Image 1 (spheres, rainbow, N blue to C red):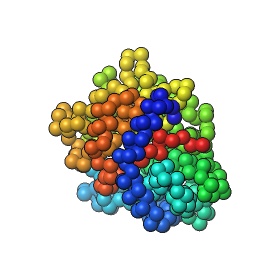
Image 2 (cartoon, helix red, strand yellow):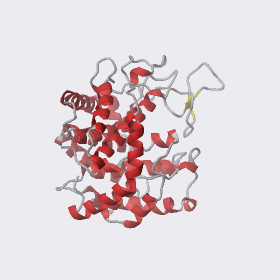
Image 3 (cartoon, rainbow, N blue to C red):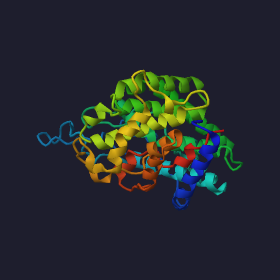
Image 4 (cartoon, rainbow, N blue to C red):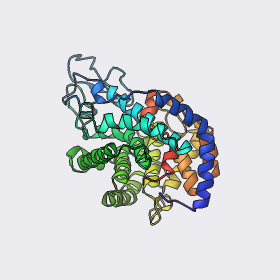
Length: 379
């Protein structure tokens, strides 16, 4: 993931490591105490799948007050706390565990972190009694309407740091080679599902943050599996579909601004765009510097949002209907953008933001929480 002069990056990475060291080691201490728990640990009678199938319910769907026993109705932007979220929560914990352990392994080289991470990986990807099926046919279901939807694919953004963190730890002599093979096999199978199932194709063609997150996920998983063709496909899609199709000339995302949570969705989509650049940039092609013919770029998007992160009170659009007070946090586009484009102001702003958000909705929309692992390539 080359994005600039090696010496400058080494200095920058050291600054990030120094800033995060105490936080990373504290998170790793927590992660060392966690026991593996997969989708088989929680079962919903609403799921049309089996116990190995990931299941979630659409966040913004509620009982109809006019017909309490009928199909749920939508209240956009308002999350229903009674919906089944256990599988998503388990996956977020898994992501936090592996991200923290991989970060601590990078900082210390201690194999105890690898051993613990592979305990969790074995449960999710290798143990036939507890593993998750590599598909997502039953995500974001709606009671009385559908048993699953294509947009549910966005739930597995929390497997990105799992895939990359485990991939980095493959180099350790403490890594279980059989589990490593099972991990790669699982993600190859999931990539096949993402690129061939009708849900995957629909999500790929989504014209908002869902389409961005499809590319981001596929790129991350293709990095782990070494799928050069999919990596090239994702680069092309970023340059010729995502940027020209989603970004306005001023760097904003009009479809996200039209939502009931325009601030949070703008941050979320920009994080995803930046991660695509981070994952897919190499010695041959630097997406951080890529611009469309009319000047749209991730740099312009960060420039658009920067003033409203520095001072949220200047936000000229409507406030989010929920969680307005909890944004912004330490967004990855700030630290990765600073690293790639040599913008110290972005780095300074990132340093002062919350690196350890605890609100579940914020965690749900912040899949990248461990920048140190993304400064390292999978062997």
